Image (tube, rainbow, N blue to C red; front, side, top):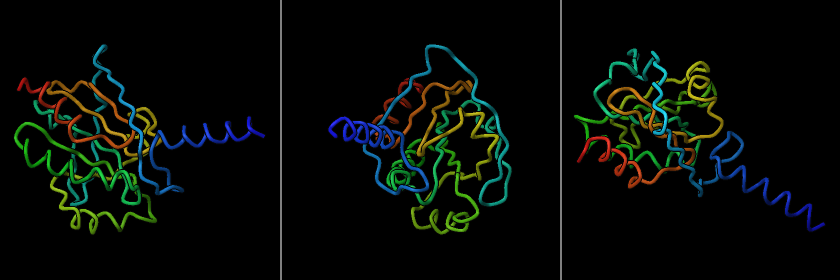
Length: 177
């Protein structure tokens, strides 16, 4: 009996570490940081359609630090992290761009624009595709975010809610300030 409880407990904890799934709307409490700086790898380029109908290319932002945030309106930890991303975009608008990649599906896609208005989202939000999800390592939990340096290299990957301080420390390091 106690082995069964421990197995169920560890499976539950493991699932919570990785973020939201459509079935769970519980807040994220654990964070995993993967530093990819040891091996420089180019971020996969993409062209995605934004919520205002424009085509957004990742390559258009070369020269800036980019935060890619894979998220959805129904994800509690995603909602909690949006104000920090809005603040970062305000503070570093000339040197950093946040790009939200919405993984909302047909059931919740209509919630994106009202959500953006409610949260004051001030950065581009694009509709994610299965291709971009695959190209970025088959995103399995959200929020998942990436930091891309000014040369288009992936330097960090975060699974779960990321504190503003972690983002700011990494941005300052990349900008040399």
